[in-house]
Length: 252
Image (cartoon, rainbow, N blue to C red; front, top):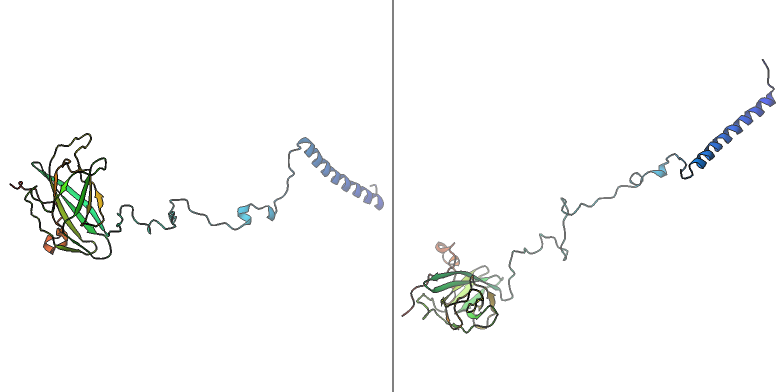
């Protein structure tokens, strides 16, 4: 066996190491020449972790309509705090007016109008309603509004009396008139809008009777004095709705 001297063995070892290092560098260089756009491969380090792994997760917001999500209105209130759209607002007068159904018998018409105390205090009314009638063009009708029902008909009229309404309580008046020819196409001769107040000087509210008042432009409109609604009378009458009495035969 050939014995290699120690100095020669050390020189050969150093040469082999140099060739190995040079070979690795040459391989990397050839790789870059063959594929210039290729990025060098690197080992992942803790700093290369994805954002979701490197940072704490942020609280997510639920999508609109998802459970727990409450949409606020323009005023910053939730829908539960906002007034219902179906709830009518109480006007400054503290009362609301609502028309009843129109009853018709042999050319005679009758309709009730209910006034309700929608405020917080007690309201007192007395006497007959204050009424104006307007046509489809909003022009005033030449209607003679009567205090009482005669000579239009002989319907009972309780006469003027003080009516006290607590919050939520109602009273009503009955309107009566005789049929007059009306143009169905143009509503000429029909009172489309009725402006009514609880009495002279009181604020009026505009109501639209179903079908209008086919009273003509020179007719008469009878009224009864305000009286308490049946639902606000004695317990035996509770549950009844205020309606205009059936028109009777005209006074002779």
